[in-house]
Amino acid sequence: LNVKNETSRLRAVVLGSAVHNGPTPTIDEAYDPKSLEHIKAGTYPVEKDMVAEMDAFNAVFKKYEVKVYRPEIIENYNQIFARDIGFVIDDVFIKSNILPDRERELDAIQYMIDQIDPIKVVRPPEEVHIEGGDVMLWNDHIFIGTYKGSDYKDYITARTNMHGVNYIKELFPNKIVKEFDLVKSKLEARDNALHLDCCFQPVGKDKGIIYKRGFREEADYLYLVNLFGKENLFHIEREEMYHMFSNVFSIDTNVVVSEKNFTRLNNWLRANGFIVEEIPYAEIAKQEGLLRCSTLPLIRD
Image (cartoon, rainbow, N blue to C red; front, side):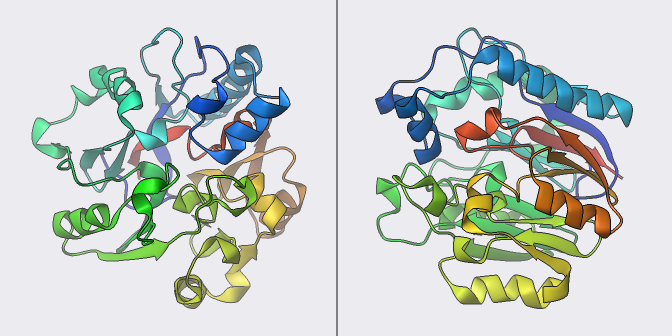
């Protein structure tokens, strides 16, 4: 295992699966406002479309000779978003404490976890809530999305708590761990930063994609502006955040996998010297997750 940032050359990754995804959830089963919107509208994605999108993603990994692990298939179960169930920092695999309904997703990649030195696999204590979408590595920095509102427990969209932030601080005392208080909504997907990667992500060696209104405190947004430089940040609009423009995925410092409809972003990336691998991912996006959410990087250079 070796992951120190979001953009170094990728060598091994877990890619989720949309096979045997199960029926469309009921309104009561929706985990996030965007899925809820599509359930109500009758536009929730169907399995064959999502399988095709993930196959396109897998084809890009093959092109770049990345070793891809897929979860074992669980019948009638959503296993697309591998990022939620675990993440790697340096050479440590951290199992997420996720929503109890999703515990089986971890079991489905146990065969891969079994190949890791057991000393390097950790599981946080019960009071720690943390999901991979909230954990962003930037060399000596670890950025973590959280929600500091007193009504944390009322929000199914609040996935990482301050216990999670402090747990990572203790585990990696030599890193600069910086938490970001995110805007959450149970009802309006356009105002819900489900995870940090819904409103921010680094690309390349010194650039990033950011949504200012995803942060509850302007100081948190300014922290990133000061660190990266405003001229190096691509600012996205509310509707672009809704379509998950910041949830692309880097295979290398100059190679970004992006959704083919993200025209404004993809043009900016190319203008800044990136190779953009465009794939269709708009159906999976309806579940408030995109390319970064579907991956769990294990080894980067």
